[in-house]
Length: 585
Image (tube, rainbow, N blue to C red; front, side, top):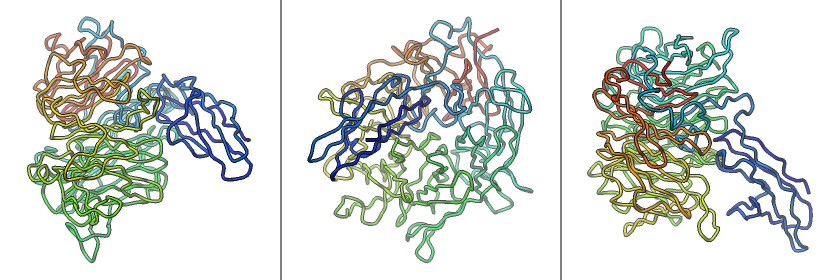
């Protein structure tokens, strides 16, 4: 037998253990973690969920059996390190910190429960930019630029610009425009969702190893509109891989804007609103409409990260209309097997199902989707509410929310569950089994858990996850904490903030040092907007940016802002800057 090798990964990364055995077939494989069998881990290799510091030291082995007996491999150790392959423990390279979209930075060693208060913590500087900041700022630690080492924060604006700032000194390292010659950012396209201009809305994604930040930008020249994928050098801002790449697409179907048996992607009718996802060498983009202005459908596209060539296209409503993917500027999530999870908006859903339980016409409007990426894009599974038509008719769909992939959870019988969670405008929290999501039944919601009445409003955003707890911030509601026990979400809150959040509610972020000094950070969309920090264990408020009078105050509210916490600083996007908070001098 060839035994599995020990692996070292950073928090948020996965590890793959492999073994080979010889003998009379068939050979049966069963992987174990710390001596306990792992559900559905019955192949010659096993890939873990995104790692956290709590996984450090876990032992993995495989038992191989056939008709003659069984053999057990040596145990391999999983080490969760702060630095792997040149990555810095300070890095924030994607929306909500990892592809599972947990929102947790577990490497924060500067900020803690004792020093985040209005006496020792506050606004330390402002980073002025040329437009509204709707994308979450990203961060690379200890990056060599021009012979010096910098901690770098990256900011994208709706004016179509990308900035790199020294995170410690606040100096601008570089700035580039994504506008072509003679172009300007897009107008609002008759919609008030992104104003006063549309340039870069979606949070970019960074590949530190290759030194690239990937950005999607919208622009126009006269009456011609463009959507482009850019690959920028993280050190200089220079275009890489012969970029940028104009985004075009078609997909078989007879739905909105179809021609000769294909629906056609019209760049004027869409904006890239949800964050980019980098997964297994492919940059995935997902597309939102301008309000509900037809014609439009729901698109997912993949691009090779080193050639920028389009590798895959999928449409979730190819034979109907609507079904946009906007998710309130959150981002599609992914699991360790390379599946993508997202919630799409109101749109046609095919209630006539094929023998496998999938819509016969291929329309998945207002659905919680699992998209396979192996061999192209396809719906691998889904969940649709029993009252989907009512929700579509009243614009009470799931599409305002983002999905979060939970770590593997074990119930009271030792069974391992693979779960994801999402919520939208109807105020339900839907917990789905990623191995059997429930599909559609007009008589009932066939879903792992459906929590009703626990949120005070709809969700325009997504939760954060930390220490077996989910934190949700609904419209007009407090941030509420829901505990996970025995692979089930508590049916009532276990804590809540003393203040509430007006539209659009809030998407929290987490900072912690491993499992200690956990803090929940959230921005309130008021004028002035307010940064809040809470103790993650009880949601007691530690700090808000109004406590010190005008010293720390933010400008006018900016919806859908998700704060970034890295290396003792908190970065908050505004209408014309990124405000930086940290320990006061």
